[in-house]
Structure formats: structure tokens, C-alpha cells
Length: 124
Image 1 (cartoon, one colour):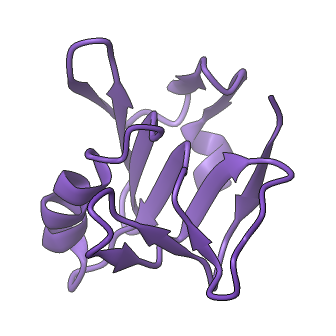
Image 2: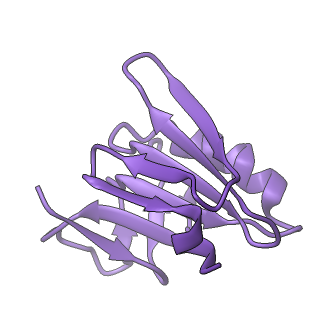
């Protein structure tokens, strides 16, 4: 299965249909049909770039809602002011999180068949 990425103007619909969020980056199945409101119901990866005013909401309330989306496999939180990416990955039993702080750390997203370093994100 192929995937495509979206970086703006795309809403992610919560599993219960009551919540809609605009993530910074979404990767979803390729060749999918978007409805007129540009809503993704089956994201595979969501990335949020944190800020002082969104940090708490993105790491708690949004994560709670996103984690209910059955298709979602990865949720990445990226700190813009320091070298830190927190990767949440769905396992068979639950979600596990792993922080990446060293510029040589490799973030491997096995289900997507991709990997990258913090240096790739922060261009250091």
C-alpha cells in the first residue's frame, strides 16, 4: 500500500466523529477519496509541531482523541526550540512512547518502511 502526505488545510476526524483537528503533517493511504471538506478519517501517521500554547493540548487531549483512531500507527510530537521528538507507536497491546534527543538518533517507522535522524528534521 502506498501513502501520501498532507501538510495543511486537511482535517483529521476523531473516531467518534465529534472532534476534528488540523495536524501539521498527516500521512494517509494514497489514492483515497477526500470529501468536499478535506477530512481524513484514516490517518496512518500524524505529526504535531509543538508551541507554548499547544504543547499541553497536543500531548494530552489530542493524543487521547487520536489514539482512538484505529488506523493510526504513529503520532510524533516535535519540539521546535530544542532537539526533541517524541514518537508514539501503536503496538498490539497499547501505545508506547520513545523520546529522541540526539541529532544522530534514528527514528524508524517500520510500518511505513522509512527512517530518518533528528538531524534530518532539524537540519543541523
